[in-house]
Length: 231
Image (tube, rainbow, N blue to C red; front, side, top):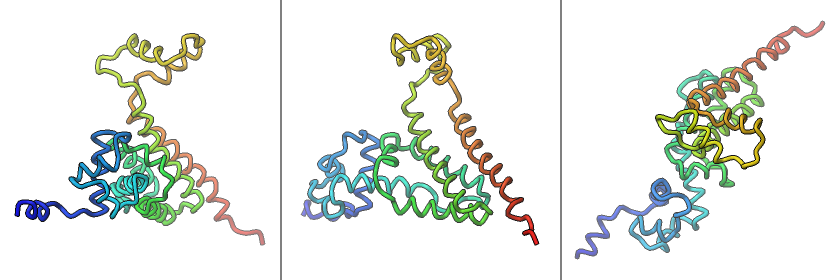
């Protein structure tokens, strides 16, 4: 009776539940720790029970990418293409920061997740409707997606600085990363690149440069597109 009651009270296993458990496991223990055996243990089932819902670890990892992309809102909050692109890059950066151990899967898995395609399709539609030529919209969307994910992944690899970090401690931290025989000009360059900075501000600057660059390009195209044909 106790065993039957326990089985009835256990939540039903589904593919979605398996994949979300995988995301939670990776968040807690790291990507390298994930195995079918340990994932089964997290769900209180034997590993073999999982194969009814996933084909193996590779399928789980591809499914984790689906779950991550499903956290990104499909429909943009605005119909302005500039703010749409900005918001998507910010959402992706926040996604990686929420899931630092799983974030690398967004770029390493060779898959085209349906949730990602739905997001991109909705954002391309807004850009086209707002007057951006499709080829330009695709190019900017690719750049914004890569930038949002890549910037967040790069942030995770940066050495952490303390609240009371000063020039000396920053120099020591940077010097520890350099070859001992690095020339002075490259040491100085490393200090410039690794100096304490506002990552939020730098991220915003990069987005501004991309968006303003396309804006300027479109302004040079529009007079040609609207000019009357020679009679």
